[in-house]
Amino acid sequence: DPTTGWDSYWYEAHYTPLGYYHSQGVPNTDNVGAECYVQLGLKENWSPPKEDGAVKEISYYAEDVHEKDYHMGTGNGYDIFGCQPDSLDTNKTRMRHGAMRETEVGDDTLRRFWGGHAWGYDFLEYGVELTMIQEYYKKAGFNYFNAGDTIGVAGFVETPMDHWATEMTPRGQIIVPQMPERPSSIAFDGDSTDWNAHPILATALNNQPNYFPSEVGAAVDDRIDLKEIKAFWNEKEDCFYFFMKFWGGPVWPNHAYEEDDPVYGHVTRKPRVLSHAVGSGQRPNHRLGFLLVRGALHAAGILS
Image (cartoon, rainbow, N blue to C red; front, side, top):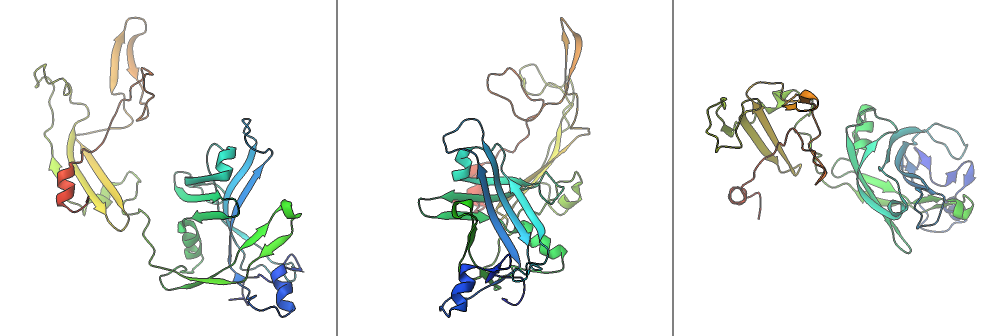
């Protein structure tokens, strides 16, 4: 709605080129009243290739601009999200895609969100998932981006290459499709109650010490024994979840590996992460996983 939000005919109390065209009666110069500004920001000091890491910023950012009155140069903007990929380098300024942490607004650094961009010779392509924007507006009491909603869009460029002059396109419109769901069936919070509705798929015996003969080399103790498993596939989320219950705990963190070292005496190995470098000589305390039988997945229609 051009009467609300940032009127794209104006920027910092001046006409945009679009606004001036419109004032001169040029056709096909419709404006937008922007409520949200979604930005790709790039800053680097050198032309590639450069190996000193001289990239200052690769940012995927969004701002709430519904209070902005750029005709008068007044109003406030509010951060919606700000994401930056790890390990910045010049290649990533040219193209990248993948998950990123949101560090501008939120305090949950365990969550990651998808974004991507790439430059062609005469174009830029850009994408970002809408989860952060949807959650921001829901907290504000608005339910945007529903299937069938009409969204106005316009392109905006501000760059030192043009001495910070601005470009603004006329208004375009898109209709929101049915949005896929982000994986959220299970809250990874250490509380298993959200698994109660899912059936147990298999139950295992509680392995006992000194029960197995020596040739059963893979079962030598009873410290970390599986009790039952659950698993399910959420088709709407395109996500596979699995759950392992053990005969007792704590299963992590633990001191699962102890030895008598000839130099240091009795040693308790502390927990390590679940991965290791090949050939490093360091092995993890735990490897947890599911063995998927492809035939069963075929029968269930999960794989084609």
